[in-house]
Image (cartoon, rainbow, N blue to C red; front, side, top):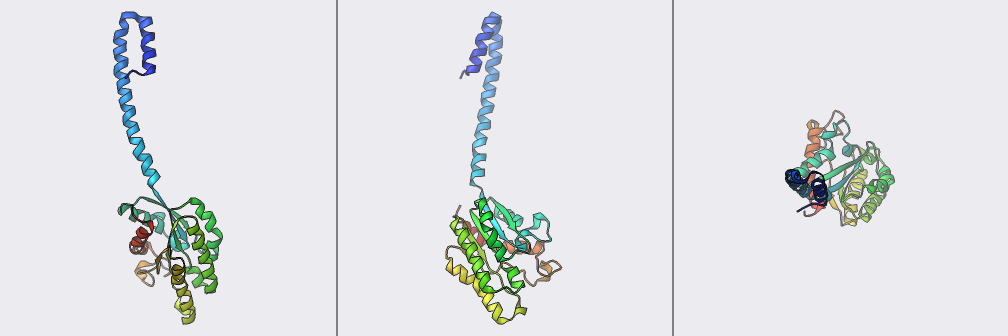
Length: 239
């Protein structure tokens, strides 16, 4: 193949240098071939890279300090450990840390629309712990979470909804009402994948929590990720 650029240069050389141009033409021909070959190789790599980026999933981890990674290095946080676990399972995903330490379900309800502007493929809803710790009215917690789930589903994202348990020092009646609102909402929004207790296997285990006895340490987050991973994969659906 003779490129337009090569043809123009070749004609110019013939006019200026006559017979000596043959050597120069061979030089141009060889180097043009090399240029074309290298360009073809680079282009062959460009398509798969772009496709890989296009296929990367986006997960919004929407929660409180348990999601944000309170007291932990960034690499030890729930979003980062989940991203690594998904990669090991063969699912590339960008996990966005939308956790806010101290956040309540009311706070989550006020910022869900802004968070959904990320256009995630999956939303993991982890909220309610601070409502329970502060003894908030479970009816209001239910209302807030209902709105968050509705908005998340309406965005077109899949949803993984995680449950929480109330502190037992608030009494049996409060605990029963609070604990029950999570499975109730999961039944109402049947499209969601429900993980009954975000801190399953970690709550009240000293070796898996920081000094406050509330927030998981890095090992505790690893347990959470290991247990929740099958639910995340289910929510994401087949590859």
